[in-house]
Image (tube, rainbow, N blue to C red; front, side, top):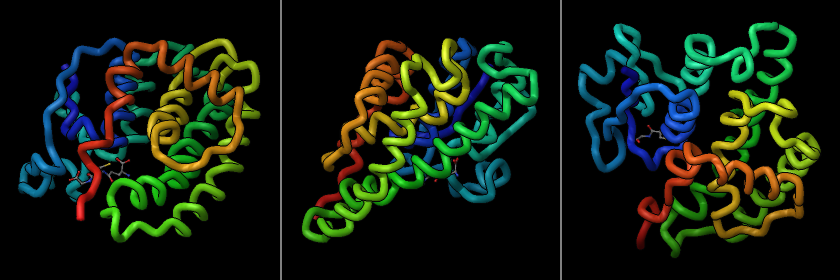
Length: 212
Ligand SMILES: N[C@@H](CCC(=O)N[C@@H](CS)C(=O)NCC(=O)O)C(=O)O
């Protein structure tokens, strides 16, 4: 049984939970972090000295860093389709997984913090505009890569789709001006056909909105 420690509203928890569910693994998720706390106890810090969620437990193993957790899940439980064993095939997908996590998701962070975590009176429309201008070329890169898709790898859904797709719910629901990306729009629609995506990645951020 896999245990994920972390609140459902955390995008990094969503990343891990979506992967666990796509792989069909028996699991439980426990609320830690945010309003629930529990991530500053000696027991939690022994698993993740950063005091951040998610943490994944699998038997004796405790792991932090959502991208490392995804790679563990792929290595331990992924089929050759989800997590190719061939190094060249794997790496061609891994570059997109890395891009999804450290380029696209990081590029989205100022929008999330500026529009959700900042109280209305302190929001900075010019900073939001700059962040939206920076994410636009990244969205177009992803649009071009998706092409006819249907998935990052072409025919098959893989771990790279988790890494690239996990932030798209916020990308498409946060109130900012998006560039035209018809192929990415179609990809996001396909993701929404996946029950695991709907349940674990499309978690409302409304409850996280800061108030004055
Ligand atoms: N690089 C880490 C980042 C983890 C992280 O920043 N987690 C946030 C939630 S998304 C957190 O724990 N915030 C404090 C809290 O929820 O109490 C990862 O990908 O797992």
